[in-house]
Length: 186
Image 1 (tube, helix red, strand yellow):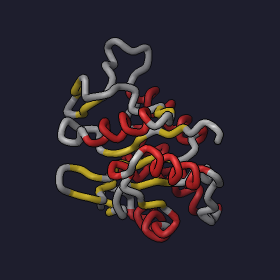
Image 2 (tube, rainbow, N blue to C red):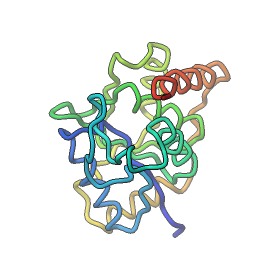
Image 3 (cartoon, rainbow, N blue to C red):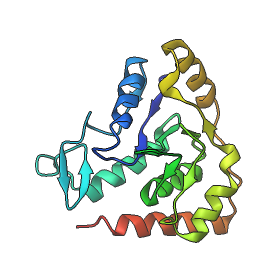
């Protein structure tokens, strides 16, 4: 078995601590989790909950998000903790962008629940994500034993996924990535 690596996308919020519980479960199973960098919400800036303190980091939020995208490219699979409060399946604007980015790089997408893409995602990307939903892996990683978790994740990581994106769809996703990232620039 080669080393498994992921990052966890989802609604980073003091109301969504399950994301950090999943991180702990993955780490205990020996999986490298690049993001979130912290193990809890440590600071809220302009209404956005963060797992790092930008005042103590050499990177601002924009730079952290760019590093997060790099982590998606090198990951074994992209983990999506797609639950927010009682909304099981929730995928918002930036998480939709991250899933699209994973698709651009043929990275398997692993969700806890069948995704429910929010209207905050631009229509063309919303439609694209919904059209490929059958290619995402749905797995309640939070309910598995360590052995079952590793067995499932090793199978998921075995091969990249051909999302069959047309050139036009690739451009649409990259435009969306640029749009979302531009909102984070200082």
